[in-house]
Length: 164
Image (cartoon, rainbow, N blue to C red; front, side, top):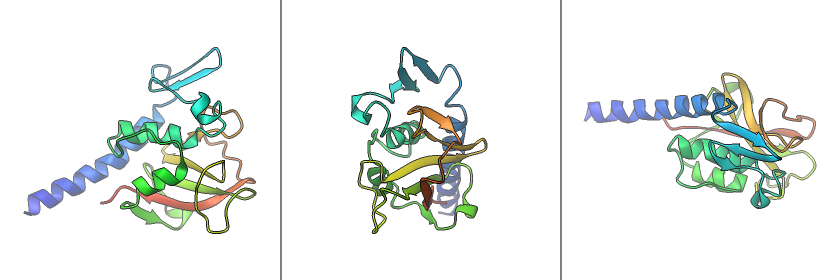
């Protein structure tokens, strides 16, 4: 029984490492293509009509990483859907406690709801904490990027860590 517990724990630690690695490698030329105004991350278009041409693509970009890591089964288009999918993950209440592989959610200072629920329309933003900084879909350029989160517009809401 002890061996099974250790394997499960090791597997979950590997999920955080895999999420970090996939996000860190996301912008390499074999993983990200931007041609003729079309952005593709790991072969999946991120700035199509389903994301308002990339304006609302943060959840899609992060769910591509999470799906490739085996953490979720589907590509999701809403931050709230990802939060539901990660509801059994450890919640990180302090931004300073985040580690590579954690998922971070920000609340839009202007559009965010008082109940802090992420429902759609840009009231929340989501990214991955990596060894290279935050990986997310830029609300400004509408394509995946590292860092560049306009913190004047967003404030930390919560982080999610794969269960240990």
